[in-house]
Amino acid sequence: MSMVYLDHSATTPLDPEVLQAMMPYLTEEFGNASSVYGLGQRARQAIDQARDEVAGFYGVAAKEVIFTSGGTEGDNFAFQGIARRNRDRGRHVITSTIEHDAVLRSAEAVERDGFEVTRLAVDRFGVVDPEILRKALRPDTILVSIMHANNEIGTIEPIRELVAVTREHSDAYFHTDAVQSTGKIPTMVDELGVDLLSMSAHKLHGPKGVGCLVVRSGVRLEPQMLGGGHERNRRAGTENVAGIVGLARAVGIARRDLDANTVHLTRLRDRLIAGILDRIPHAELTGHPVQRLPHHASFLIEGVEGESLLLQLDMEGIAASSGSACTSGSLEPSHVILALGYPRERALGSLRLSVGKGNTDADIDLVLERLPHMVARLRLMAPISAA
Ligand SMILES: Cc1ncc(COP(=O)(O)O)c(C=O)c1O
Image (cartoon, protein in one colour):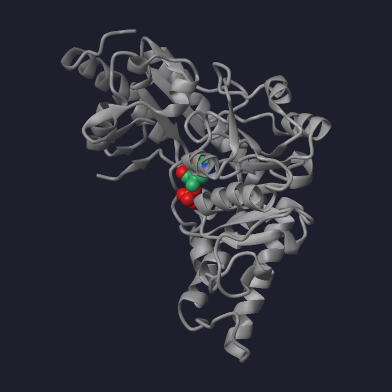
Protein backbone atom coordinates (compact mmCIF):
# COMPACT_ATOMS: atom_id res chain seq x y z
CA MET A 1 0.00 0.00 0.00
CA SER A 2 1.45 3.35 -0.96
CA MET A 3 1.46 6.01 1.71
CA VAL A 4 -0.33 9.32 1.48
CA TYR A 5 1.87 11.71 3.42
CA LEU A 6 -0.03 14.66 4.88
CA ASP A 7 2.29 15.68 7.71
CA HIS A 8 4.61 18.19 6.07
CA SER A 9 4.55 20.44 9.13
CA ALA A 10 6.28 17.63 11.03
CA THR A 11 8.92 17.01 8.38
CA THR A 12 9.27 16.77 4.61
CA PRO A 13 10.89 14.30 2.21
CA LEU A 14 14.36 15.28 1.05
CA ASP A 15 14.24 16.86 -2.41
CA PRO A 16 16.32 14.76 -4.87
CA GLU A 17 18.07 17.97 -6.01
CA VAL A 18 19.08 18.59 -2.39
CA LEU A 19 20.44 15.08 -2.01
CA GLN A 20 22.41 15.50 -5.22
CA ALA A 21 23.97 18.73 -3.93
CA MET A 22 24.88 17.05 -0.63
CA MET A 23 26.30 13.79 -2.00
CA PRO A 24 29.86 14.96 -2.72
CA TYR A 25 30.20 16.20 0.87
CA LEU A 26 28.99 12.86 2.24
CA THR A 27 31.52 11.00 0.12
CA GLU A 28 34.79 12.13 -1.46
CA GLU A 29 34.65 15.80 -0.33
CA PHE A 30 34.75 14.88 3.35
CA GLY A 31 37.22 17.53 4.51
CA ASN A 32 37.04 19.55 7.70
CA ALA A 33 36.42 23.16 6.70
CA SER A 34 39.05 24.31 9.19
CA SER A 35 41.85 22.34 7.50
CA VAL A 36 44.39 24.26 5.44
CA TYR A 37 44.88 21.79 2.58
CA GLY A 38 42.74 21.69 -0.57
CA LEU A 39 40.16 19.19 0.68
CA GLY A 40 39.41 21.36 3.71
CA GLN A 41 39.38 24.56 1.72
CA ARG A 42 36.85 23.13 -0.72
CA ALA A 43 34.58 22.37 2.23
CA ARG A 44 35.09 25.96 3.43
CA GLN A 45 34.15 27.29 -0.01
CA ALA A 46 31.01 25.15 -0.03
CA ILE A 47 30.00 26.60 3.34
CA ASP A 48 30.75 30.16 2.19
CA GLN A 49 28.63 29.67 -0.91
CA ALA A 50 25.82 28.17 1.13
CA ARG A 51 25.96 31.09 3.53
CA ASP A 52 25.66 33.54 0.62
CA GLU A 53 22.63 31.65 -0.69
CA VAL A 54 20.87 31.60 2.70
CA ALA A 55 21.74 35.27 3.30
CA GLY A 56 20.27 36.18 -0.11
CA PHE A 57 17.13 34.22 0.70
CA TYR A 58 16.54 36.27 3.85
CA GLY A 59 17.97 39.52 2.44
CA VAL A 60 20.72 39.79 5.07
CA ALA A 61 24.53 39.89 5.02
CA ALA A 62 26.39 36.58 4.98
CA LYS A 63 27.97 37.36 8.36
CA GLU A 64 24.48 37.58 9.86
CA VAL A 65 23.82 33.87 9.22
CA ILE A 66 24.85 31.34 11.90
CA PHE A 67 24.40 27.69 11.01
CA THR A 68 22.85 25.56 13.75
CA SER A 69 21.56 22.02 14.24
CA GLY A 70 17.97 23.11 13.52
CA GLY A 71 14.99 24.96 14.89
CA THR A 72 15.29 23.79 18.48
CA GLU A 73 18.86 25.01 18.75
CA GLY A 74 18.06 28.28 16.95
CA ASP A 75 15.21 29.02 19.37
CA ASN A 76 17.27 28.11 22.44
CA PHE A 77 20.25 30.09 21.18
CA ALA A 78 18.21 33.21 20.42
CA PHE A 79 16.12 33.19 23.56
CA GLN A 80 18.71 32.18 26.12
CA GLY A 81 21.63 33.82 24.32
CA ILE A 82 19.88 37.21 24.33
CA ALA A 83 18.76 36.85 27.94
CA ARG A 84 22.22 35.91 29.23
CA ARG A 85 24.09 38.58 27.29
CA ASN A 86 21.70 41.45 28.04
CA ARG A 87 20.73 40.89 31.66
CA ASP A 88 22.55 44.13 32.55
CA ARG A 89 19.89 45.99 30.51
CA GLY A 90 16.84 44.32 32.04
CA ARG A 91 15.34 41.06 33.28
CA HIS A 92 12.00 40.96 31.49
CA VAL A 93 11.16 38.94 28.38
CA ILE A 94 7.90 38.51 26.46
CA THR A 95 6.66 35.56 24.45
CA SER A 96 3.28 34.01 23.61
CA THR A 97 1.34 31.04 24.99
CA ILE A 98 1.37 29.21 21.62
CA GLU A 99 5.11 29.05 20.92
CA HIS A 100 6.93 25.83 20.14
CA ASP A 101 8.31 23.98 23.17
CA ALA A 102 11.83 25.06 22.14
CA VAL A 103 10.82 28.62 23.06
CA LEU A 104 8.53 27.77 25.97
CA ARG A 105 11.18 25.63 27.68
CA SER A 106 13.75 28.38 27.07
CA ALA A 107 11.40 30.83 28.75
CA GLU A 108 11.25 28.53 31.79
CA ALA A 109 15.05 28.29 31.78
CA VAL A 110 15.55 32.06 31.90
CA GLU A 111 12.84 32.27 34.56
CA ARG A 112 14.93 29.94 36.71
CA ASP A 113 17.83 32.35 36.08
CA GLY A 114 15.88 35.21 37.65
CA PHE A 115 14.08 36.67 34.63
CA GLU A 116 10.43 37.59 34.60
CA VAL A 117 8.50 36.17 31.65
CA THR A 118 5.23 37.55 30.26
CA ARG A 119 3.33 35.03 28.12
CA LEU A 120 0.87 36.83 25.90
CA ALA A 121 -2.57 35.31 25.42
CA VAL A 122 -3.86 34.86 21.86
CA ASP A 123 -7.34 35.27 20.42
CA ARG A 124 -9.64 32.45 19.22
CA PHE A 125 -7.65 32.25 15.95
CA GLY A 126 -4.27 32.18 17.67
CA VAL A 127 -3.33 35.76 16.80
CA VAL A 128 -1.19 37.88 19.13
CA ASP A 129 -2.74 41.34 19.30
CA PRO A 130 -0.12 44.14 18.95
CA GLU A 131 -2.14 46.16 21.47
CA ILE A 132 -1.73 43.43 24.10
CA LEU A 133 2.00 43.38 23.37
CA ARG A 134 2.18 47.15 23.75
CA LYS A 135 0.68 46.92 27.23
CA ALA A 136 3.17 44.23 28.26
CA LEU A 137 6.30 46.11 27.14
CA ARG A 138 8.35 47.66 29.96
CA PRO A 139 11.54 49.67 30.18
CA ASP A 140 13.36 46.53 31.36
CA THR A 141 12.05 44.29 28.53
CA ILE A 142 15.06 42.98 26.62
CA LEU A 143 13.46 40.40 24.33
CA VAL A 144 10.19 39.72 22.53
CA SER A 145 9.93 36.28 20.92
CA ILE A 146 6.82 35.60 18.83
CA MET A 147 6.66 32.91 16.16
CA HIS A 148 6.05 33.83 12.53
CA ALA A 149 3.60 30.98 11.95
CA ASN A 150 2.26 28.36 14.29
CA ASN A 151 2.99 24.68 13.68
CA GLU A 152 -0.29 23.31 15.08
CA ILE A 153 -2.88 25.74 13.76
CA GLY A 154 -1.10 27.40 10.82
CA THR A 155 -1.87 30.95 11.95
CA ILE A 156 0.50 33.62 10.62
CA GLU A 157 1.28 36.26 13.25
CA PRO A 158 1.33 39.98 12.37
CA ILE A 159 5.10 40.20 12.89
CA ARG A 160 5.59 43.61 11.22
CA GLU A 161 2.98 45.20 13.49
CA LEU A 162 4.35 43.43 16.56
CA VAL A 163 7.87 44.64 15.71
CA ALA A 164 6.60 48.20 15.13
CA VAL A 165 4.97 48.30 18.56
CA THR A 166 8.10 46.86 20.16
CA ARG A 167 10.33 49.50 18.51
CA GLU A 168 7.97 52.30 19.50
CA HIS A 169 7.91 51.40 23.18
CA SER A 170 11.20 49.68 24.01
CA ASP A 171 14.76 48.79 23.09
CA ALA A 172 13.98 45.07 23.25
CA TYR A 173 15.29 42.70 20.62
CA PHE A 174 12.69 40.86 18.54
CA HIS A 175 13.12 37.17 17.71
CA THR A 176 10.82 35.14 15.49
CA ASP A 177 10.65 31.38 15.03
CA ALA A 178 10.28 31.05 11.26
CA VAL A 179 10.60 27.26 11.20
CA GLN A 180 7.12 26.78 9.72
CA SER A 181 6.98 29.88 7.53
CA THR A 182 10.34 29.63 5.75
CA GLY A 183 9.82 28.52 2.17
CA LYS A 184 6.03 28.80 2.48
CA ILE A 185 5.49 32.56 2.69
CA PRO A 186 7.85 35.55 2.25
CA THR A 187 10.38 35.81 5.07
CA MET A 188 12.66 38.69 4.06
CA VAL A 189 14.14 39.86 7.34
CA ASP A 190 14.04 43.57 6.48
CA GLU A 191 10.35 43.31 5.69
CA LEU A 192 9.60 41.48 8.92
CA GLY A 193 11.87 43.89 10.81
CA VAL A 194 13.10 41.29 13.30
CA ASP A 195 16.55 41.14 14.94
CA LEU A 196 16.76 37.35 15.07
CA LEU A 197 15.08 34.59 13.06
CA SER A 198 15.41 30.85 13.46
CA MET A 199 14.68 28.18 10.86
CA SER A 200 15.17 24.48 10.14
CA ALA A 201 16.02 22.76 6.84
CA HIS A 202 13.92 19.62 7.25
CA LYS A 203 10.64 21.54 7.06
CA LEU A 204 11.39 22.57 3.46
CA HIS A 205 12.68 19.40 1.86
CA GLY A 206 16.18 19.79 3.28
CA PRO A 207 18.04 17.42 5.62
CA LYS A 208 17.30 16.97 9.31
CA GLY A 209 19.65 18.30 11.98
CA VAL A 210 20.61 21.56 10.31
CA GLY A 211 19.18 25.06 10.31
CA CYS A 212 20.27 28.59 10.89
CA LEU A 213 19.80 31.56 13.15
CA VAL A 214 19.84 34.95 11.46
CA VAL A 215 21.27 37.56 13.83
CA ARG A 216 21.34 41.18 12.68
CA SER A 217 24.64 43.04 13.09
CA GLY A 218 25.08 44.67 16.46
CA VAL A 219 22.79 42.28 18.35
CA ARG A 220 24.41 41.20 21.62
CA LEU A 221 24.12 37.41 21.82
CA GLU A 222 25.89 34.96 24.12
CA PRO A 223 27.16 31.74 22.48
CA GLN A 224 25.58 28.53 23.79
CA MET A 225 27.96 26.03 22.23
CA LEU A 226 31.47 26.60 23.51
CA GLY A 227 34.59 25.25 21.86
CA GLY A 228 36.47 26.30 18.73
CA GLY A 229 36.11 29.57 16.87
CA HIS A 230 33.56 28.36 14.32
CA GLU A 231 30.82 30.64 12.96
CA ARG A 232 32.81 33.75 13.92
CA ASN A 233 33.09 32.57 17.53
CA ARG A 234 29.35 32.37 17.95
CA ARG A 235 28.64 28.65 17.57
CA ALA A 236 31.43 26.16 18.13
CA GLY A 237 31.57 22.77 16.46
CA THR A 238 32.93 21.30 13.23
CA GLU A 239 30.54 22.40 10.51
CA ASN A 240 27.98 19.97 9.12
CA VAL A 241 29.15 20.63 5.57
CA ALA A 242 26.74 18.33 3.73
CA GLY A 243 23.84 19.54 5.87
CA ILE A 244 24.69 23.19 5.29
CA VAL A 245 25.00 22.62 1.53
CA GLY A 246 21.64 20.81 1.60
CA LEU A 247 20.01 23.61 3.57
CA ALA A 248 21.20 26.19 1.04
CA ARG A 249 19.96 24.10 -1.89
CA ALA A 250 16.59 23.67 -0.17
CA VAL A 251 16.09 27.41 0.33
CA GLY A 252 17.24 28.04 -3.26
CA ILE A 253 14.59 25.64 -4.56
CA ALA A 254 11.95 27.09 -2.23
CA ARG A 255 12.71 30.58 -3.50
CA ARG A 256 12.61 29.47 -7.16
CA ASP A 257 9.33 27.57 -6.76
CA LEU A 258 7.54 29.73 -4.18
CA ASP A 259 4.81 31.06 -6.48
CA ALA A 260 4.02 27.74 -8.12
CA ASN A 261 4.07 25.91 -4.77
CA THR A 262 1.81 28.48 -3.16
CA VAL A 263 -0.84 28.00 -5.85
CA HIS A 264 -0.63 24.20 -5.66
CA LEU A 265 -0.57 23.97 -1.85
CA THR A 266 -3.33 26.50 -1.32
CA ARG A 267 -5.61 24.72 -3.72
CA LEU A 268 -5.12 21.34 -2.05
CA ARG A 269 -5.43 22.88 1.42
CA ASP A 270 -8.67 24.64 0.51
CA ARG A 271 -10.12 21.44 -0.92
CA LEU A 272 -9.30 19.67 2.34
CA ILE A 273 -10.80 22.40 4.50
CA ALA A 274 -13.99 22.77 2.48
CA GLY A 275 -14.40 19.01 2.07
CA ILE A 276 -13.91 18.17 5.73
CA LEU A 277 -16.16 20.94 7.03
CA ASP A 278 -18.79 19.89 4.51
CA ARG A 279 -18.68 16.15 5.14
CA ILE A 280 -18.01 15.87 8.84
CA PRO A 281 -20.67 17.29 11.13
CA HIS A 282 -19.33 19.17 14.16
CA ALA A 283 -15.88 19.63 12.66
CA GLU A 284 -14.33 23.06 13.06
CA LEU A 285 -11.28 24.73 11.52
CA THR A 286 -8.66 25.81 14.05
CA GLY A 287 -6.37 28.76 13.48
CA HIS A 288 -7.03 31.75 11.29
CA PRO A 289 -9.32 31.19 8.30
CA VAL A 290 -7.31 33.51 6.02
CA GLN A 291 -4.02 34.45 7.70
CA ARG A 292 -2.74 30.88 7.64
CA LEU A 293 0.06 28.89 6.05
CA PRO A 294 -0.78 27.80 2.49
CA HIS A 295 -0.22 24.11 3.21
CA HIS A 296 -1.86 23.84 6.61
CA ALA A 297 -5.33 22.53 7.51
CA SER A 298 -6.16 21.91 11.16
CA PHE A 299 -9.41 20.94 12.81
CA LEU A 300 -11.19 20.05 15.98
CA ILE A 301 -13.51 17.12 15.47
CA GLU A 302 -16.09 16.80 18.16
CA GLY A 303 -16.63 13.45 19.84
CA VAL A 304 -13.36 11.76 18.80
CA GLU A 305 -9.81 11.65 20.08
CA GLY A 306 -7.26 12.87 17.59
CA GLU A 307 -4.91 10.03 18.51
CA SER A 308 -7.52 7.36 17.68
CA LEU A 309 -8.16 9.05 14.38
CA LEU A 310 -4.44 9.00 13.58
CA LEU A 311 -4.33 5.25 14.12
CA GLN A 312 -7.31 4.73 11.82
CA LEU A 313 -5.74 6.97 9.18
CA ASP A 314 -2.47 5.08 9.50
CA MET A 315 -4.26 1.79 8.84
CA GLU A 316 -5.43 3.31 5.56
CA GLY A 317 -1.89 4.47 4.75
CA ILE A 318 -2.52 8.13 5.54
CA ALA A 319 0.05 9.97 7.70
CA ALA A 320 -1.32 12.94 9.66
CA SER A 321 -0.87 14.43 13.09
CA SER A 322 -2.70 15.60 16.16
CA GLY A 323 -1.50 18.17 18.66
CA SER A 324 -2.20 15.95 21.63
CA ALA A 325 0.49 13.68 22.96
CA CYS A 326 0.22 10.54 24.97
CA THR A 327 2.33 11.06 28.06
CA SER A 328 2.39 8.31 30.67
CA GLY A 329 -0.79 6.71 29.43
CA SER A 330 -3.06 9.73 29.60
CA LEU A 331 -3.86 11.96 26.67
CA GLU A 332 -2.72 15.53 27.09
CA PRO A 333 -4.32 18.11 24.87
CA SER A 334 -2.07 20.51 23.05
CA HIS A 335 -1.13 23.73 24.85
CA VAL A 336 -1.86 25.59 21.62
CA ILE A 337 -5.47 24.42 21.31
CA LEU A 338 -6.06 25.07 25.01
CA ALA A 339 -4.63 28.58 24.56
CA LEU A 340 -7.32 29.25 21.95
CA GLY A 341 -9.87 28.83 24.75
CA TYR A 342 -11.28 25.38 24.01
CA PRO A 343 -12.16 23.01 26.85
CA ARG A 344 -10.02 19.92 27.37
CA GLU A 345 -12.41 17.31 25.84
CA ARG A 346 -12.83 19.39 22.73
CA ALA A 347 -9.07 20.02 22.45
CA LEU A 348 -8.41 16.26 22.39
CA GLY A 349 -10.13 16.00 19.02
CA SER A 350 -7.51 17.89 17.09
CA LEU A 351 -6.30 16.81 13.66
CA ARG A 352 -3.65 18.43 11.47
CA LEU A 353 -3.26 17.72 7.77
CA SER A 354 -0.36 19.53 6.13
CA VAL A 355 0.13 19.10 2.40
CA GLY A 356 3.35 19.20 0.38
CA LYS A 357 4.42 19.80 -3.17
CA GLY A 358 4.31 16.07 -3.89
CA ASN A 359 0.63 15.68 -2.93
CA THR A 360 -2.03 15.32 -5.60
CA ASP A 361 -5.79 15.72 -5.88
CA ALA A 362 -6.08 11.94 -5.56
CA ASP A 363 -4.54 12.18 -2.06
CA ILE A 364 -7.14 14.72 -1.03
CA ASP A 365 -9.94 12.62 -2.58
CA LEU A 366 -8.82 9.64 -0.51
CA VAL A 367 -8.93 11.58 2.75
CA LEU A 368 -12.29 13.12 1.95
CA GLU A 369 -13.68 9.70 1.12
CA ARG A 370 -12.30 7.82 4.15
CA LEU A 371 -12.22 10.34 6.98
CA PRO A 372 -15.99 10.85 7.41
CA HIS A 373 -16.48 7.07 7.87
CA MET A 374 -13.65 6.85 10.38
CA VAL A 375 -15.08 9.71 12.42
CA ALA A 376 -18.58 8.20 12.35
CA ARG A 377 -17.21 4.81 13.45
CA LEU A 378 -15.14 6.29 16.27
CA ARG A 379 -18.06 8.36 17.50
CA LEU A 380 -20.10 5.16 17.75
CA MET A 381 -17.34 3.03 19.30
CA ALA A 382 -15.85 5.39 21.82
CA PRO A 383 -17.96 8.48 22.14
CA ILE A 384 -16.45 11.40 23.98
CA SER A 385 -19.03 13.58 25.60
CA ALA A 386 -19.63 16.57 23.36
CA ALA A 387 -18.58 19.67 25.20
C1 LIG B 1 7.53 26.16 15.07
C2 LIG B 1 8.65 25.21 15.30
N1 LIG B 1 9.74 25.62 15.97
C3 LIG B 1 10.78 24.80 16.20
C4 LIG B 1 10.77 23.50 15.76
C5 LIG B 1 11.95 22.62 16.04
O1 LIG B 1 12.73 22.45 14.89
P1 LIG B 1 13.75 21.22 14.76
O2 LIG B 1 12.92 20.02 14.47
O3 LIG B 1 14.63 21.57 13.60
O4 LIG B 1 14.50 21.13 16.03
C6 LIG B 1 9.65 23.02 15.07
C7 LIG B 1 9.61 21.61 14.62
O5 LIG B 1 8.66 20.89 14.85
C8 LIG B 1 8.57 23.89 14.83
O6 LIG B 1 7.47 23.49 14.18
